[in-house]
Image (cartoon, rainbow, N blue to C red; front, side):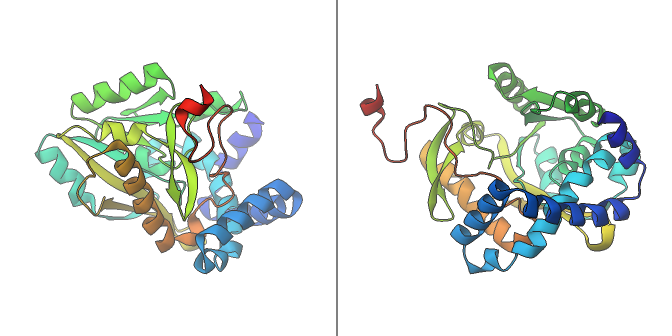
Length: 286
């Protein structure tokens, strides 16, 4: 499989995206579980998400087949696919003020390229979970720029993120990734409780950390990417629970702007093994 990955990486991005659109439909038609998650999640979000289903199926396939290009091409070629950048002045302002930066990147567009783009300028530490397929691990680690460091989703990784922020560097994470038991709380996401990580909300507590949303819109016809940086949109909430809900609400607004590029097939509403159900009293399960 690694050999196939290497072969795919040599294809132009436009061809990979065309093949990916076809692959997206093949996976959708072949997998009842995939199909169910996508249909349920779009229905939960609303009619605007349902209307984007067909496009989202194709975009999910593009996201899969662009990985060989993003991971295995030289960094200069990967970064060269970023055709437009909006909101970068927000990052430059944090640099001038010597603040740490917390970059929240949902499963939207090409979420692999955002950290690589930032890492072409300054150091960034990214929280990640090792892939279930072991052969992907070395490929994932290879496809990183000089300034991009990986922090595993464990206690050691959390320490790495905290140290990076204290050095006034950037950290990145997928805030809509379902955390493990004890690492999250239930918070609304498109009107339904979703087990949501608290780590991002905890890291944002520091007075010298700037919280920003960042994503890379996938341009049509394999024309590259548009990196967009946005502010949180409101003052940071005071309590942990309120911040978690605030982050989810910010992601909702972002996803509603680009519904066809969100990974609707991700099982966002699953509960990790042993986690109490929404609204359950913690003491009742003791």
